[in-house]
Length: 77
Image (cartoon, rainbow, N blue to C red; front, top):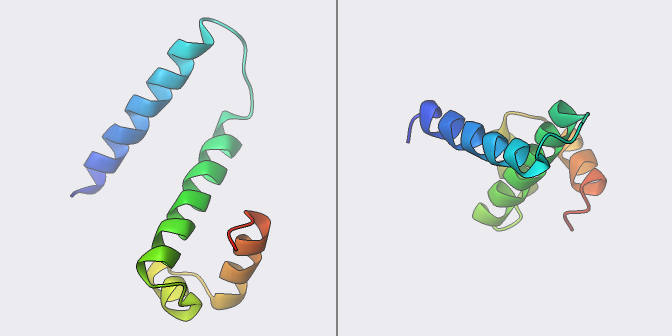
């Protein structure tokens, strides 16, 4: 899978999101997308490595302390 596959998926989901609004005004879309994608990515990687936070942090490219904070923020425990 290339990064363009992921980009196409995100574009498709955003298109669907805005169509569902039917012209209603919205705000905070950037923050929403970042939070949704970050939490699901962290959860997916943690499950993939059987909750090994050191390995998950390595795969995600963040330090373990940052990962622990994000796990708490998104209530992933």
